[in-house]
Amino acid sequence: MTEAAIAVNELSVRFGLATAVDNVSFSVASGESFGLVGESGSGKTTVLRVLAGLIGHWTGRAQVGGHALGAKRPKALARVVQLVFQDPYASLHPLHTVDRVLSEVATIHGLANAQKRIVGTLQAVGLGPEFRFRFPHQLSGGQRQRVAIARALILEPSILLLDEPTSALDVSVQAEILNLLRRLRAERGLTLLLVSHNLAVVANLCDRVAVMRLGRLVEQADVERLRTSTPEHAYTRQLLAASRGYDRAAAEIEEQASPA
Image (cartoon, rainbow, N blue to C red; front, side, top):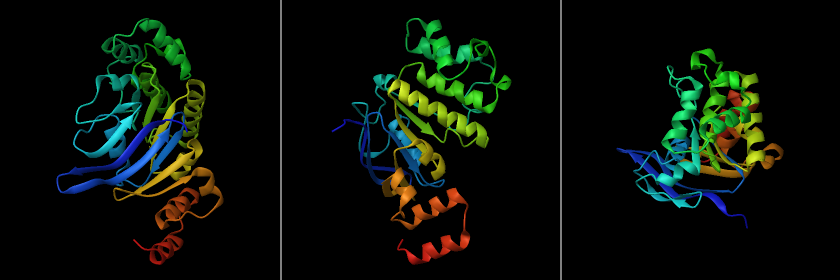
């Protein structure tokens, strides 16, 4: 049996009186690409932030790359897992060149051969050396997201957490970024955990998917099964219909026919 790179057991997160994540459990095998899908407010990004060590107040158990998570983020976790944020326009400092963005990571973590790593990492995401000294405003949205992925990769993690990495991009550029992530996974043996509201995007990249609604995990399935058979839960069927073109009448029938 393949060792789990990510294991989440009975994870719950509350913000004040609101429950953002309610008793969620799932695991991701080493080298697997796994998707968490759901609408805004479903709790999927909160799960991702717990796994990245950005939220400390939660209950349950979570393990990432052999590290058991607690209230404080283990220092060694950064070398194992990195998070790629949703918006490439907001995640890069507007006054820092690409070289400075990547150099800061190398300096903070004391990486040897920093310059060689920077050039090699940029090449890995499809950007040549001419991009090193450009500012974010000189880059397209797709190029900015490639820089954000390079920033995550420079530490050579084994796990990438991807928070809606294509949602701010045009459709054609989305396909390029998904193809890049697929290639990087194959070349580096990466484990990917992708969060998205778009089931079509998840199905494009992932082997398995977990569907979240109102903080709860309502269904897990192989992507291939979703393509060839009817999902068990009405909400998953609605997401699948939305990815093909939303049919309001059909969605209302599904909602009425299924239990909450």
